[in-house]
Image (cartoon, rainbow, N blue to C red; front, side, top):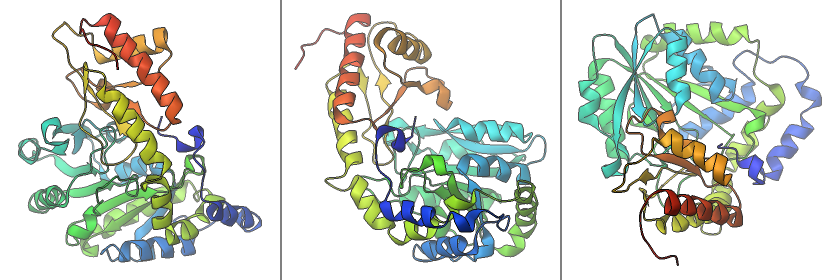
Length: 369
């Protein structure tokens, strides 16, 4: 799972201190949208990234996992179609279906480093399409979609009058790549941006996240009103965790460097996994540029079992937990997702067990290093 705290990665001390010192002031409900100070900090954070927001454009939530279904319920009528990347995180498809909509998948091209295939996406648009979901840095592949690709997606949304929905929870977990805020490239297009502190501050249990609505307010007013009504039903987000947002965003670049810089633990662990993976001829993988996952393809001249069978066997026979690519709406059945969050010694051991599995179960002669 994508839980850095479970693998011992520390949260920034000043963020934890802010929450602890605010406990006594956190016993009452807040505004349904969240603390004003936290929303002010988020608005300022996006201002520095070229996106003009008011605090009233921002809703805090108990993790992106709460906000995505809420955003869907405010948008969809039965039968409305939503474009989703494939592979992609399963929460999005589930939330579309729960709101009565229909998920429609557009291809991300492994040969192009898992960048979206814009032509395939255009072909998937129908008269029922209402929204386009993006996700960069990308789960499960670790791809960072470049600015040119994002401009193309924004152009498609603009021309077809689609709502953009940008998941950017891994925005500050990148390696020699630069994350681009999609909404900043298209201020004239209605866009909902999702992000939070779970990954970058290693506090997923705090459930500290937000969604920001941008674009022409005449076009987004009714939608924002619907979001506000739905958000009010849960009264307010987790109050202590809201106090983490201002100090976390004030030092976000330092936190990013501590985790993903040249001496950062996330970079070290991802490099460890990548180097070990490169020694397994049966697996090929586009190098991740963000997040902390690898998404290798299982290649062999022999007949291959389905990726879910591979995942079951790795867990049952070798004690290694991976996720099958088919769980991420990839129909080829030949990918698995690996997490690179564990300590390097644990990653090395896991990769040795994975290599042993493919050595013994798929006929691919090779010499060990």
